[in-house]
Image (cartoon, rainbow, N blue to C red; front, side):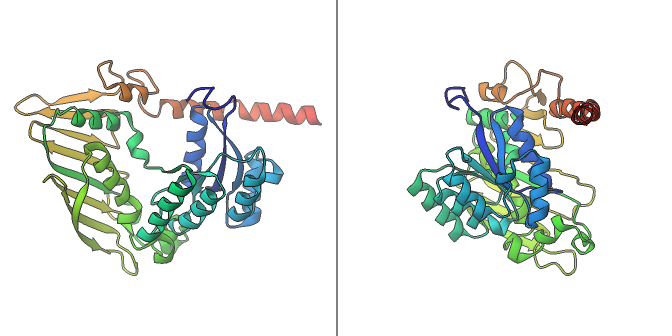
Length: 352
């Protein structure tokens, strides 16, 4: 994005949800700062109005743009000459539709956490609004942003695997292997509530990531599915484990496994694609590597940063070879830990 595209300024960003203690809100704010193209200028960060307001002020949001709810934020920002250009929705699933609808109808673009909605009817309604208003609506399927995922997509599109035969994608986690929602874990509590999470438990929370990853990399579209949804932790109303058989257009077959109760799996998203001429394997816990095995050939470990990678892969690569994903975060962590206390002390002395 060029300076001309930005009309000489950063994109003005607003946020709904994502306040104190919300993991994904911090990810959005960090991502917005990474390329220095966005400026967070407004927010309704919490259902607790006072807590949300305090969070906004702590994050240097102007007092008149620290809103108590999304309705007042959308109305006020749409009326301002310097109003937000786009709003990031970082709230539980059941709120995505009304917030996105309000933003789009007010002429504000939207970045929304997945899943976009909890029902097909709501998704189709948003599709109609986008077509009518011409506004932008994007969903954050984060894992498709990894450079080696982009490289896998490029290699399959170039025919290195030949015709794709089978796709195996899995996303197992362990963090809900016990009834953590009963122990005042708010992140777990809304995920097991059908009224807040929607009808899908693990399949809606993490299965949607796995499904998108498989389709993004292979370019295949599902024709039919057969799902076995299970609930292993007693008392839950939604699935915490799912096995899904997929038939793709063109004859390929797939299998998706999502689980919130897989002990020993921290964030083990993995994709394996098998074609007529070879296979590719990518794992989120080793994101800098792509494993390629040609038919009757030697298995290759392709590393991020190589000069012979696809042009889009190189464009998505932020650090030199040998500097893994996480290098920038490490720099941010070390910088944040060092000068801030000293700067704070000097400021307090000046104001005294």
